[in-house]
Length: 541
Image 1 (tube, rainbow, N blue to C red):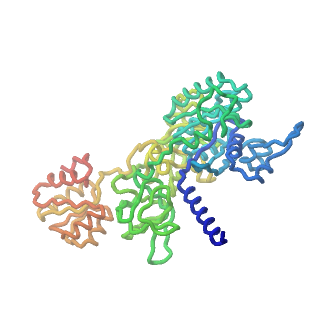
Image 2: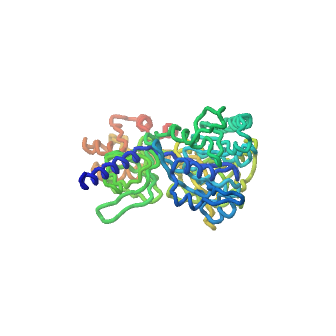
Image 3: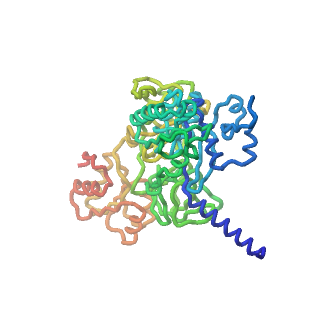
């Protein structure tokens, strides 16, 4: 066969391979559990038996033990790469490994088991879809195993796998396995809704990791790899409300101004009307740019740069959101906290709250309770110490735009930072708003068309209640959009043309036609019906 044909066939095969790889879905999972339960050994065995380890890596971790003729592989060393980890035989930092099979791609976060490094475990589990909790069959469920299972559930991990390890050291006893399985199911059922699968394994010997064990014929469930390949994925993130935290404003020249960031939820399309927060201004999407070129639409978790039809003041830390399904906003929130630092939490002490790309001052006003990891009881405390998990209320210096953590991991999470040392003190998961951001009456920007006789009376009534209102006879669309961008209720004497009306409506602004009304109360009710005024503001009558 000619050389040219061979090259064409090779190129075609490579293209097919790349397309097949791109079509596979991605599962992120983490390991957790108490120290010496065999987490790193399990991951090393999984990589080795699934043929995802290079020969030079195998040679690097193979050596003859004292009294043995045949060299043995230390599977833990395939993930424990730090010198201190290899010297002590423990995992300290989170080790990320990537591998794939014919069915799926995987990212593993091998996390430490020592209580001292719980913060590293939380880091690895924060982005995981599944968590493997290892349990030593000889020791049963330890305090650290309970802590890691609880933290994984708290962090929104949807699938838990209890890998009951070292079955070879208990003679592959079904009785031992069933007792631990029942205890762990009872534990997980008491604090979360995550699905649970239990698998008896021997990471050292390879039983039920990739290949089914002949020594545990009483077990009929899947092997660990079979479960990882077939566990259902949560794929509806693209259907959630759009959330695009702005990480950078790209301004290469005077003709381009793009707002760059990673879509944390939802889908955005060219021509969509979007809302910029905290300004509250709206505009249409002019273009969606990626490294590979422009797109007509983009979905989470793609990184993009948006350009808008209007010149809006948007900077790093702002949020571009869907207009109809807006995030919540508040200056006080209730959140679950996992405390990392040796220094205890102090209420009313100033901290920094890093939420997405923004960092703002705040303080913890009160600790509602601490969860007892052993009993899962809620204990009344005034503070939290290292590795404590609890719920607290925080107060912020400016409004925070968020979704509850159970709805959106990215916009519902934050970290607490010490402003003096820059140390990360805690991870937080927002549960709900405690108080809304605005202290006064709520209203939204709108154009209100009125007869001249009612303009002055309605203006006075709105001003008395603290609403931002202005009277104008100018009906040019640019002028009206400028007033609306400032959040004003614009009282217009007379009419506006059809083109201006359509332009304002498309931009997301309310246009209320109150002409013909003779009473202020009637105009107020019409503003409430159009959601310009909050229905609770009855004092305007």
